[in-house]
Length: 482
Image (cartoon, rainbow, N blue to C red; front, side):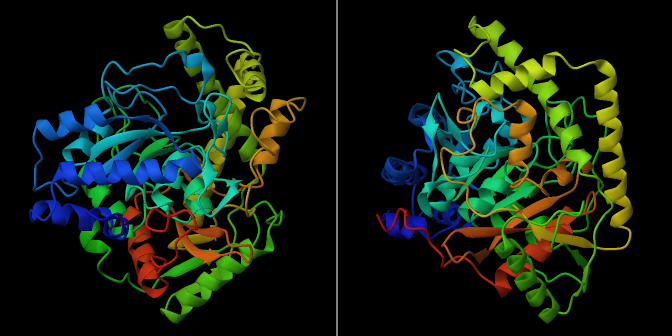
């Protein structure tokens, strides 16, 4: 298969070729590996190639009734996902790498959906930073501008999808880590509702961090959600049912909606880049032309929610760090952790129990406020990131290592000002590549819905994709152009 043909097709179309016998799964894998190797020379997104794993999947047989039968796929190097595939979590603490004792339920469902795993992709160290540049692996570069970050923490996955090397990729999102790199690289990044997708066997809180995919089309994200949604053993809740298959819903236009939009943060601070506001207003114009009612409105959210979320997240990272140190036998210090990640670890160790309970109360308040807000509006539109572009080497876990962990978190807030609210409140949230900056970088526009309104978020996203398509926009680093 020619690279130029491969790179123009989304995962749904590639699966149709396999299903119809026009191309074999092995041929698709070989084409994907060529595409990845060609682009990765420029963007540095791959951690490991998993050719033997892919061939073993093919050897076991491909179910041609699966929605993504034979489609090449990459996994974020975040650990605990796939038994038999090495993970490093972007850290020297992992030594020669660690292996999950068993695959996650989500990953097993993805495999049943037909995907073939051909590589693992770079992440920031322990997924802390919203830029993927580590001492372990180096910087992952944005296909639109190689001096810019691909975002994070799912930066490697976003960069490969944007460069046409794979049609979709695995990612995880605990505070925007699917949607932020999707916005920076100009692809689709969806985070499902709390309880919508499985987190087992080890994940506990399905609202904070959710695993899903990054894709080039809304329909691919819809089809994957159809394939993997549903509870797993040990869940303490279950998502509400919905009317249609997501793949059917995205073929239909939604009803006329009442949509809120934000041109500043809900706590009153402006977005750093004015073009982020221009992006939102341009989408509002499209939505009004489609017959929707759009109103500038803001939930009553305190900026303190950021501090509470970071505190809660960092306490979980401490446990991950300690567990990995036990597994690898490596020490926990600046020889194994990046300076600012190590400071984050030390800060969390000194935290008192009452501080954690106060943080949980603030997060609960923010979540309840979002629920109240969505009693008046169907959806909420905002920039995915409040700042355009993030030059490599300016705000990672190594540079400016004299600053405190809390100051590092505050500096990252310019980018992730809105996205974490969806994690805190358990909302469905998507970033769409609907706008380009004057400097030639993509600007993502985020659509959030009330809990369990995944169908509506995807439905409006597909309507916007039809009204303002992005498929013809390609970055300078694109497999068919190299």
